[in-house]
Amino acid sequence: MKDFSFLCDIAKECGFANAGIIAVEKIPFDPAFRKACEANQCGRYGKCWTCPPHVGEINELIEKAKGYQWAVVYQSIGQLEDSYDFEGMMAAGETHEKNSREFIQRTKGIWNGDFLHLSAGGCRHCARCAILDEEPCRFPEEALSSLEAYGVAVSQLAPKVGMKYINGANTVTYFGMCLFQDANE
Image (cartoon, rainbow, N blue to C red; front, side, top):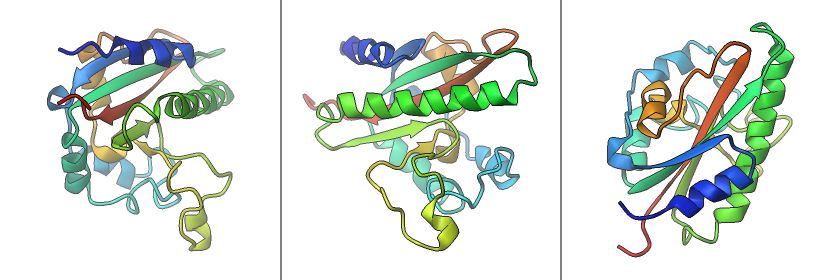
């Protein structure tokens, strides 16, 4: 495997607890994750351009993701007061998104424009998504789709990159990843 460890270093500098590299062919995808989106488990179904149903058909998204060679996977672990600390979960999610955007800014020159960045729970770039006003996305170059919208089986992915999916009592864990091509191949 090529040495992309510098990407893990950048991810950690951006505030992520852990980061790892994986060949895209080893990423577990499952179209069944779309059912969780359709059940609106996160409350964002139909409320964001980068979430279902607007993000696209699940099998097409999986094929798009599989068109890349490598991925850097990163993880945030937030501490909670207890397992019902919804505010703590939301704050950790906001920090994860902020760190994801910093990672994008720090690495976008590396990818030669060919990358797919996925994060946790859909885009939160705008306080109110333009879809709610029946308008096009205001920042399509900065919009983030979720891993789940692309059918990534995150609980199966985590151990493949040396991470835990659940990190103990009173924690919340978020994942993100950037899929990319090896510019040297």
